Image 1 (cartoon, helix red, strand yellow):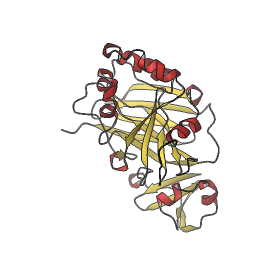
Image 2: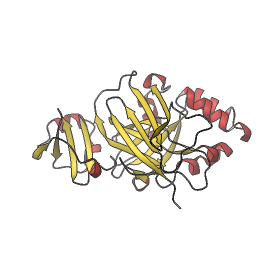
Image 3: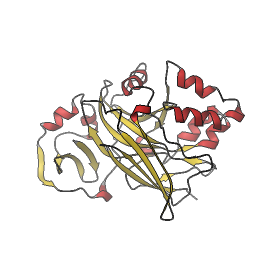
Image 4: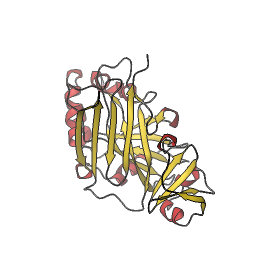
Length: 278
């Protein structure tokens, strides 16, 4: 089943029908360790819908923080090493990839997150910007993975490549994170064969495509969550982006007007236009 947050309320999709969820806020739902079980028995409100208005979909986030994991795919390791070589960080990311402890960093608050159809942003002071398609975990306050959504971790590669300590500026800014369209609610883990794909459209034509699977993810989602929750508490739960295995070539950078389409098998497709504020 899938859970959607909309301007008209919260809806759960089962068997192709959408029922309004009564009796709980978004934060209250994410706080439930057995969200799938709860939604299976929730009382529907009103008549079931055959579809939701895409224009009314919101990012699937309430009071949660968004965190991210880095260098969890070999492709990402290679790209990070190459972009930071001139700054003396060539082996820095190799050590992170091989280390027992994963790289985890704060990504966004809800105010900096955009939902389906809303514009992600490229920084005005960046010359090399890329989207990063990522499976995103929806985690309860007690560290239980209750669902999955699609994430876009927008990144300024030239800023991070200049110095690894600039990562917060390269990663954390208004409109730097997109989530949606909904949450696949599941007690079980996703199969490693689950595919992740991205298409970037420019002037009506495909400018870049790429694909990978969760089999390429070096660390299990549960491992990433366990490290995040070691010394951090999340009263409303959190969302954890798990890293990217798809990176455009070094000659590619996003431009205003591009459209980014990210699909994850069984989870959904997230589409966002790209803009740069004047």
